[in-house]
Image (cartoon, rainbow, N blue to C red; front, side):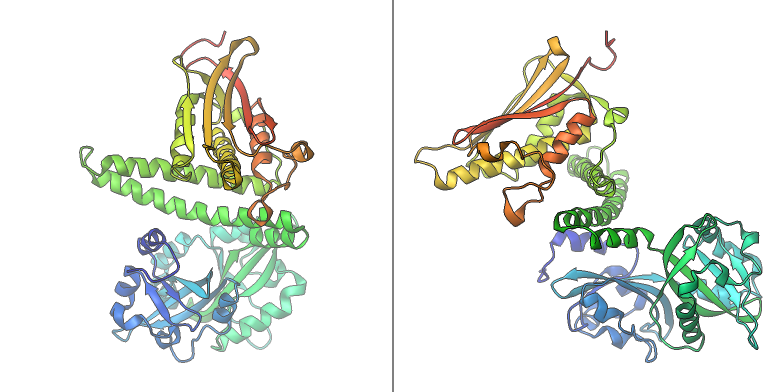
Length: 496
């Protein structure tokens, strides 16, 4: 039984991760771990649950203030050593991600093999270099300096060269300080000294200078190693430039812009989750016979996940571009409108109470339009959500006998080369006082429950596709939104 404030589907997805994952509560005690954690560290699940996270770390390797920061809502990262049940030690890079409600997700990446290879570099030089080449996080290694001599970089991987936009020969045998912002040098030096002396230290923030003068904001994850038989320091640079950009934007934005920024960040995170979900659904499809009873459900689940992934990416792109949408006709499809309208109906039928009647009329002759299908689905879902809210609002105060209803209709208008989809409701209608403002960015009548972006995005997407979104409404009787799109011939037919 799931007693945590998270949906069972989320825990199922987390359990499918190939990395060790755990959730701790506000007291720092484990309330959930995935199967990989149990296998990786060897402790029985019942022994881990309820234990404090520090019980599994070496005595001198606590996560410092990183956990308390995460409980306060600030994600963090730390390299730490974990004691396994058999007495062995695992070196892991640990991300601490706030989940809200006083819970933190611990995501571990095993670096034991990497650091072990670093220690054996002089013995297994070729295999060691092959391993380092495979590391996709920007990384450098330099010997520790002696008697005040500046450190010299002995190794850089391709990822660091790409981040700094510099060839390897411009980095090797040079002091790493030449590509660190001068204002960060003292903090970085102090951090590296602590790490070299074996003191626990959370990753340091550092700004790196690219060859073109631009700045990359990074987290510096350092560790003492042995390289070519000498004491050395390894450093991984986790690029957080986009996170810093979004936070800077948020600090300079008003409340509405902040909501858009946060939505973009959430969309980015959900995009990563959907990538994994789609991969596991593909695995399931490959292992399942086409005739298996569950096969149609798996295919439907993958289609829904793919649609959700595309919509999430669209929201992320919209927030990143501050609402300025490009011409989507370049990515348009010849879409059979009935297919997308029926999909929007299926999605929203589950979210709209059965007391609200929903009807769809697509006509006998198929109607085709030139529009990105995912953009069209996004617009229709927005319109149906508004129609639902309008009918429920009227139902709350309506006279006896009122029957809330929503109708979708598709028609072709060859005379002006337009296909038109209408969404009609018999809800409250739009007051004249606000009718001229409903497409304004961030304007909403839903109080804290609305962002004011739905209709703005819907009209922008329609216009970017070469169409438009208009409406007619009468207070107390209802509203009709008309989505006009470029009419297109069916696939395989000449447009003339």
